Length: 145
Image: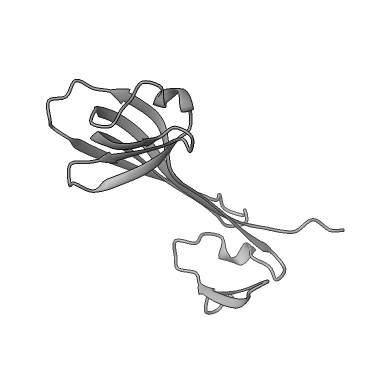
């Protein structure tokens, strides 16, 4: 419904609706029968380095966003990158996971993209971890059969 900017979705579990705010660009490009594609990647570590422990933990977050160009179907990519100096509280090499306690005392578990990064880190050590979360959503027109 273009006037109210309402999108009705239908899937195997039924129907739902979504009211698109002004941040959804190119709303007029959405047509009946289009598909919504959503991908989410949660806490993927791309860097894990032992640090000299001075007991100080820190956290820096940066965010970025990309949206569709005029005339394209709506798309949006949101990513957050976090750099944290934290204490390792758990390592699961088989599952490629490391849990770290940051400056606020919160424990965060991240998947380590390169398992070699886990080779020489252990519980109790302080590390610098760079990890990201990303969410991408796009509207596409299904291919004709």
